[in-house]
Image (cartoon, rainbow, N blue to C red):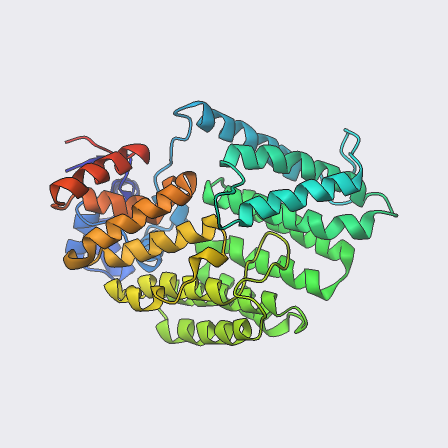
Amino acid sequence: MDIERAHIGRRIRELRKWRRMDQQAVAGLAGISTSYLSRIERGERPVTKRLVLERIAAALRVSPAELTPEIDLVTDDAGTETHSAMATLGDLLGGWWVGEVPDAPGRPLPQVLDELARFHAARNSGGAQAAGDYATQVATLAPLIRDLLVAAADPQLRREALPPLLTAYHVAGSISARLRIPGMPSLAADRMWQVAAELDDPVWHAVSQWGRALFLSGTNRARQYDLAVAVADQAPADRAETRGMANLTAALAAAARGDGDLAETHLAEAAAVAERLDSDTSPWPSGIMQFGRTNTAIHRVAISVELGHGARVAEYASSVRTDTISRGRQAAFWVDYGRGMLTERRTRDEGMAALLRAEQLAPQQVRTNVWAREAVTGLLGTGVRAARGRELRFLAWRMGIAPTG
């Protein structure tokens, strides 16, 4: 079965031929078998680990982002609005440095801070409340950033406006990373660094450096790991959340490089930090970290999948209290849990149910998730019993993954 625009294998084959490399050469450089690479290229095996994706990308001398198929968001009015909103946000991030004043006058700062607080609360809600789709979120976020830039240029308002501006930049980077907008996550991280420099505060400097490490992602795992470890070692102890999140970022970077022992070390350090907090999910800093016991457990599930533990993720998943964290983080947990359960035939139904639950929580996030798409693509090529088969085909259709033969 061929899956239109869905499997990474087609892009790998195109780039391999463009490089004039045979499968044996690419497989050897990536540390996988030629038969495995051949099945990936034919769409018979999904790519289920960051390690495999990034090694193949390195063998082809491209960014991992070059291997993931573009997702056509412009299939309805919501998709068109998302592109338009991201263009507006990109112009704002690229056109104005911290300290410069946008053309439009700003609204009163108390009004702006109240609206930003409600925006963060909606994004972090674990219940029925939600911040809306990406277009809605960006449409709310862009004018808030503009207003905060205006306030930050006022000497009397500067200290009050800068920390919320840093959190708003982080959200911009997070959304653009999920939508895979090239360059925008790094630009958002750069703006976070500028805010931290203006504040001249070690607490916010550490937050900005963690954001830099987080948004670096698969483009350079070794560098991501080094940056995250530096934050984990140097962040002020009075805001332990930053140290905890930096350890989680370092753990995922280590797992993506295939170093399970190092990943476990950083997970243990993050867990120790989380145990010292009063709640399962810390509200600091507003809207961006959600560090605590729940987030650490969610990362443990994700890292277990990366390390190839398969259905054993159920052991770690049992400790996750999803009700204490945002719908977006819940959806990420269910995607990773589903990926793990799908590796074995006996737990495949449970894995399918997990993907459906993730989609119910955050449909747009799941649709743009590379690993969710690969999991669905892989399922389409297997024998799934009739009832689940119908659910799977409808899920694939909603994600824009369509069988062509």
